[in-house]
Image (tube, rainbow, N blue to C red):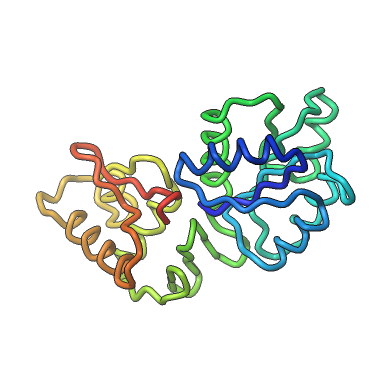
Length: 226
């Protein structure tokens, strides 16, 4: 995933960049609220990690700015302010999660993946986005890194199901039920063949294949590879 880390403490920012990179994320940093607002206006991010106590514009004001934008990314507050009132204030201001410093990197990564799964579904306009993959559900259109993906109805349905459950195994049975409407085993390789065609289209312009086959289980769309 492409992440924006808004943190004024250089040591903590460095720790976050190193730790998140080890989990496959690309990280951009901003050390104050003003820089964060500018960066958010110029780039698109899959998620934001936000400190509350920032010089200039504080974290809550930055969060308000994020929520006013049309395509706002899910935001996790990472703060030393851990009392109940502070956490409630952050959540009510629009944060998707709140983690208190000091923190564990594994927990932070798990929480980031969770907020992206929860919020990476669809906005009121029917737009889904995970990484560089975008789906415009109401218009039956999809793209990756700006390149149009010409998907048939089943491929489109598979992509939406995988995006809905990104970073989780989606079983063959689930796909048969939700994409084909089958409550029985058809005895064919229709899921495998359609996944294969979807992979070909997702990687047509040299991008990494974001779909993993989990033998005996199903498929995973990895947000870090999308």
